[in-house]
Length: 177
Image (cartoon, rainbow, N blue to C red; front, side, top):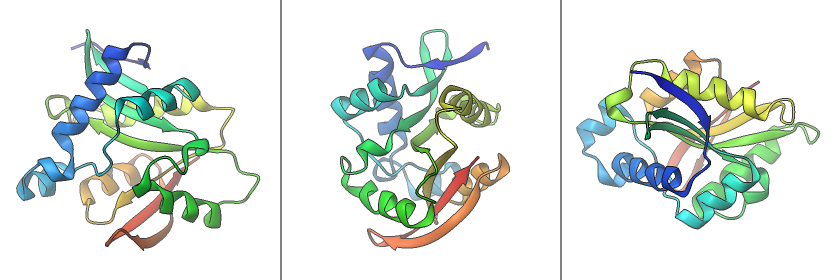
């Protein structure tokens, strides 16, 4: 398997991201899978995904023509575009110094067939390389019940900024410098 890491350049890649997203959404997986594999919460549509990509290209892991994983880059200018993420940006504004330039990682997901191969870490490495020096940090949030995702984020160097309650759940706001 020869996985390469690059930015999204085609509509087909965006469509594959959306398909991978659907396969891993909290609402589309069993409780057992949620516990074992983790899950994603936010559902994007093609238009917003494309707009975000035009401002700061998303990072993907590709196996040939197949998107094996993705890390969505979400510039703060999109803070009011996705309802469930509005509280995250409000919490970021309260927790992060005003002069810190950050990019939000809008979501990360690795296809089940490609997990446990270091792709998660390499997606973040590629994202860091792609957004620096323009941004000082990458900030995201994880549902506190998604222990698999939290452990993976902490393992690659994310630090907790704060926890907060929104949308009937606890969120952990984390940052990678």
